[in-house]
Length: 396
Image (cartoon, rainbow, N blue to C red):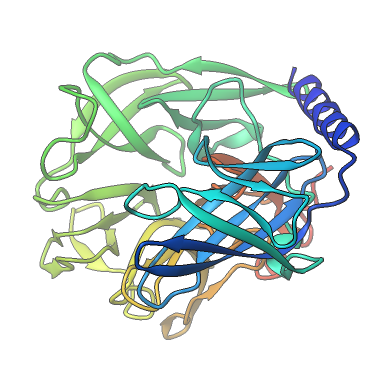
């Protein structure tokens, strides 16, 4: 079914391009929006993926505006181009003019303003070009995220506030909702223990569609077999703070990795997100001053041998940047200064929730670079920062 959808999508975009007589739209563009207070410039990167989808990113060229959005070409005619942002048409231009002229609704006031779109280079930047062959790792459940690899190519994931198990069957997966009272809890992110007998889950008792005040708590779910939950335990207040405690995972030794915006144990990260290790006696400590900074660090994953940690970091203060996945390596002195993973993992629009398969073959992560939240899977040997650890784990 997946391959049929991809094939039909490819045929659709090929037909659109043929019927419109379109040449390649790839490149680097300047979008200029004429507001009541003056012109606002944006840079647009456009790429044509291997499936024919034209997508990219729109970034404000301003030191005072942090604006980064995925864009997607959703329609083109002989004289017009239509671009969506988050599933809604926000830019329409007349392609017969140079520069292209039209309308855009991309500012915070949500007003439609006159705009021009000028192609400045025939190629997108290197980071965006690297994404052309990267296709989403699609499942038959919408909104899948926070994939947690298990043994034998299986995995757990979260979708629509519920937890599922996916069993590898041939070229696909048999997906089953975990057996627990889904009417009682909302879960938002998960982590799987090394022995695969427990899950950690960030969530709340189900009272409405959003986390309660404080952002929810972390729970431990005891498993019997793959899909039966025999108990759900709220972790103690030395772990769950009065603010936001999220993105739980496990270390190689079975301790807990988690992110908090508040105070964990005696550690204080109020006002920012930091990563903590919590031992089995519930003692918490910040993972490392090299990893925790005044920026926001979250979503940590430690490989099974404890050789490195992957996490995502964003910066809200100038110069701002979206979530990027970084790696910090274990050294004799602790943890090394983190460095970002190369493209196509980091594109400039955000990447998070890194996880590595149990056999070391694949890196899984989430991103929005093709227009919406989607899962991706990349062979570890194709990521330069991971290749030294997994050279012998080339996927079939």
